[in-house]
Image (cartoon, rainbow, N blue to C red):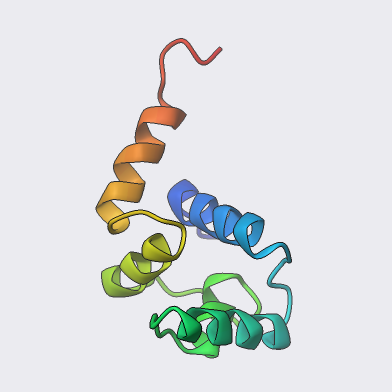
Length: 95
């Protein structure tokens, strides 16, 4: 079984925290899509559902999709999110 990228898991977690609900079904994915649309960010409900494991199989998301999701949680883009969380995950004084 293929292991998910910890950064993908992290961005999904951060999104659910901001949303205040978990994306566990297609209805929740559609609800998130509608929220994104109000902010002029567009991702299909199926893409969201696939990313959150509602629809199989998981596919590696496009960088553009990750950029949009990063924007939603107030990062410039995916690279900005990745660098920020790399610093947290690998902070040497964390433990």
